Structure formats: structure tokens, C-alpha cells
Image (cartoon, rainbow, N blue to C red):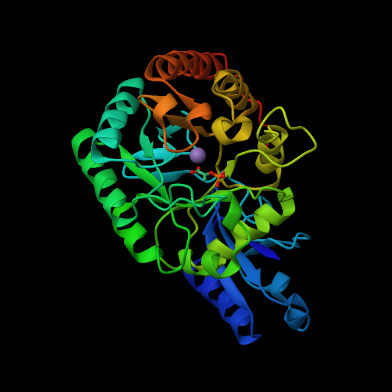
Length: 343
Ligand code: PEP
Ligand code: MN
């Protein structure tokens, strides 16, 4: 349930509404609307049955939210969320690009890739220091050493860092070095991890689970927001289907669905979504055309030698070519007012 306050509602009016909610044993969350304050009610709303909230001073309207996720829903927060990370806005007018290798392999590799990524115009350097690998015998990541190389690359290039956290114990070290904490597809429903990462105060990028429905994905986002972090970015990275030509089936319809159902920004990862470097550019263009707020993709100075995911990594040349197209496409969309999202 959401209580929409009148634009002229006073601080006291808001205080009284919040107090009634809390006195009934429920939780109230105050959010900024376009012109007015919105108060979200979390918990069993039947407890409010005897409280005439609608009659209280300053209350304009009460909207009931039918979905199991509330804080992540657009009903609760009608305006799209823009997340500002040190001046880089995710969910704003321009798509934000996150690029880099699948894994941080060495200091030289990440520094070289960071220069490429920066030159092409990405704002974020990606790279896993903790790698969730299917086989325990595959390269598992450089862990804290890898995080330090990412931080050095940030210092040298000014890029921000997005990197994955795979365990609760990993939250503190990753939070020390990362600008965005990435929750990988395999951990999307690791609820203990979601609750803890939501407490750390850093923005979180939540990748869609391998077989997660949109409803499950938004409920996973709800765990993080409810734990204390409103800055959640969703990342569509493909889902398992019967198709085996591609590594996953990139569900671009999820962009439109999320924009309708939620106020959270969404980026698309065509590297993991397809598993094939040749398919990254067309899917990146399509994602931007569909209204994605950004892209995450894998770039490696020498994909043939990559320790993981070389086949879905772009060379520097292919990355520059893609970025050139993405910039032209998003500029055209802005200039022509081509907004695919009807809010
Ligand atoms: C990644 O982005 O490094 C990754 C492992 O992707 P996913 O969790 O989507 O498989
Ligand atoms: Mn990868």
C-alpha cells in the first residue's frame, strides 16, 4: 500500500501518517515523488483497517499494491530511478557502458583492458575477482589481489569499478574496492547474500537468475532494497531455454517488462546473453533501442588467451566499433525523441 501525500502536505502531516502506520505495527518508507511525498507501507495492511488514513490531513490518495514486491514496483515509485555513482548517472538520458574482461587475470591484463575500455567511452570497468565457475577446476579468480588491480585501474583511468561478490564473507573486501557490487545470476536467489549486500550501503547490480521469472527477479531486488539499499540496477543476461546455439536466450522483452513493472534501471549483458562475440553488437544495439539504461559486456585484449569466456569477449577493435554504433544510436534516439518506454 502506498499513501500519496498532497503537494502542500506539511512535515507534521507526514509525521502523523508515519506515526499511525508505525503504531499499527507496520513499517513506513518515505519516498520523493515528482511533486509530492509518497509513503510506502510495508507489512500486513489489514492491521491498518481501523485507522482512517484517508481522512488524515495532507493525504491525497491511497493506492494498494497488488504485487509481492513493493519497493521495487513502479506503483510504489512512479518516477524512474536514476542512480548517481560519483557523477555517472545510471537510468538517466545516456546509456552507461560497463566493459572489461570476464575475470581479472593479472595486473597487466586489467590495466591494458581498462585503457581500451576507457578509450571506447565506457564509464565502468568490469572484471571478476571472485568467479562463480561451473567446474571447481576452472580458474576461480585472483580474489583480493584482483580487487587491488581493479582499484589501481580505477586510479589510472578514472573508470568506476563493478565486480562480483559471491559470498557473505566477500562483501567487506568487495565493498572496500567496488563502486557497484555485482550479484551474479547464480546467486540471484541467495537470499542470505541479498540481505547482507543490501546492508553494505553500496549500489548493487542484480543479474537475472539462469531460470528466474521477472517476478522472482523483482522479488530478489526487493530483498536488497528492503535491507537498506535503494540503489539497485537490474541486469538482463539471458535465460535458459531449449535453444543451445546460443549460451543463453537473451530476453530483451524483459527490458520493456521491467520498465513497466519497476522504477529500477536495467542494463543488458549481451556477452553472457549469447555466448558469442559476433552477436554482442546486434544485441547491444537492440537493447539500446528497447530502452535499456546501459550495457555490460566482456572485452579482452586477446580473447583467444582469456582464462574464461574468451568466445564472448570483444577485441579492442570490435569494442570500438560497437561503441561507435551505440553512441550514434543513442544520440539519434535522444535527438528524435525516440523513447520506447511509455510510462
Ligand atoms: C559475470 O558477469 O561475470 C558473470 C559471471 O555473469 P552471470 O552471473 O550473468 O553468469
Ligand atoms: Mn564471463
